[in-house]
Image (cartoon, rainbow, N blue to C red; front, side, top):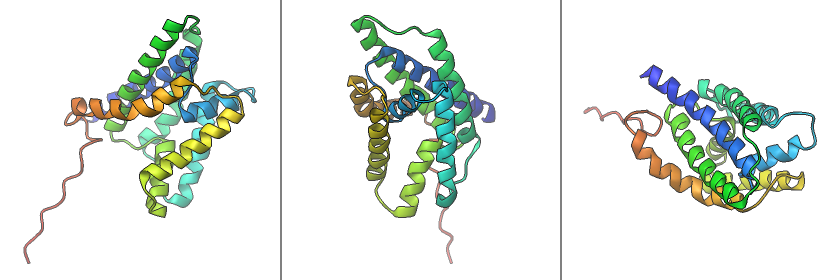
Length: 206
């Protein structure tokens, strides 16, 4: 089981980074965090992957007051995705024809969903950004949707102001990623533990 989980974790993280690169090369808009990463990268002598890694490390610092504990998947998320997205940007040329851009965007979102299911399904710790959300939910008692919306709206607005790409791809990702993940979960449920609720102990008779 451990080998299976590790394979799912690292394949998922690598595919996640590659899907980010494809989305960038599609040029039709990025997800909120990548709009932020791209905007920051435009103003620093750093690669996109390095910006994602540094952002992840900064977000991890916010875990301290939230009393979140990182796992192997958390640290791996920072490193593997950064390497994968830079490798993808080096390998994949920018799409120039509209139909290729649209196809690349769709493929990127689908692969991103599959990658998310794999690395979360591995159950070895959330990524820094997901942990920030769950930590804030736990500490504030606010609903998940409001915390996630607040975080992503903030990073999206900041990234856009810095020059990150917002477009139809941003909307496709926002409205497509959740349903795609939900659609894919049954294919790994039972094969990986990340989406299986922990069993509740049976009550002991007095």
